[in-house]
Image 1: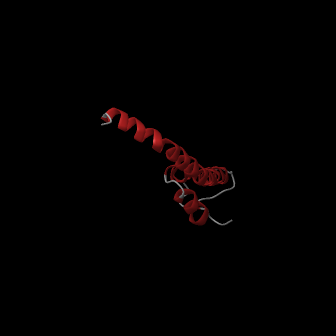
Image 2 (image 1 turned 120 degrees about the vertical axis):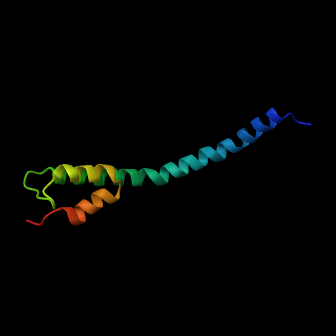
Image 3 (image 1 turned 90 degrees about the vertical axis):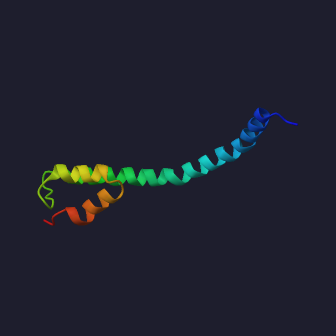
Length: 86
């Protein structure tokens, strides 16, 4: 009979390549999404702090917090509804 500690080690070692493969696949999927997210946040903040930019509610600090803290939806809401048209 195989000791329990050896079974755990064998089980861990046999699943390790699969775990590495899954984490690599997951990283390849998530990396472009993270780059898009970061790009949206940066673009929104740069647009927000342009001197000529006017926003709904006239409070750029609140919009900056929404962009940074609300995740992907924050920059999208700002770009679609937060800006006043000149």
